[in-house]
Length: 78
Image 1 (cartoon, rainbow, N blue to C red):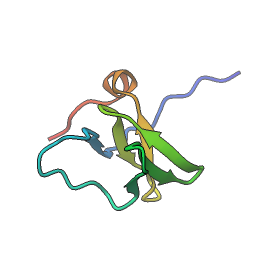
Image 2: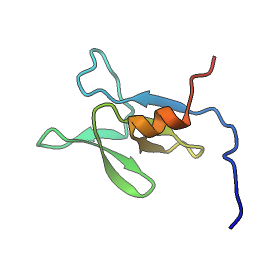
Image 3: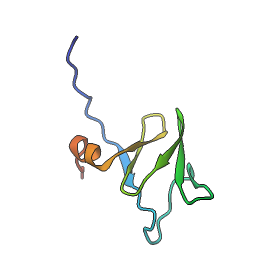
Image 4: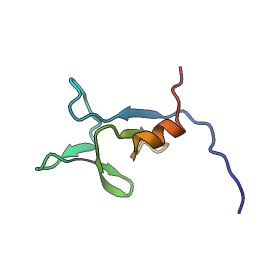
């Protein structure tokens, strides 16, 4: 099996915090009757939890990333 490195790419991401004052979430996010937040992905609807990161993919899609994985994978850019 070969070895590969991720191409360096700048992403757009926002950390989901359900009770963030004045937060405006992307239109893909919706809440069901029991207060669970969901968003549509290319693979279908997924639940989003507090502190998850929502990453905008290369095709404009959203996908989730848990905070520990995000921190290990990404760093801020200027």
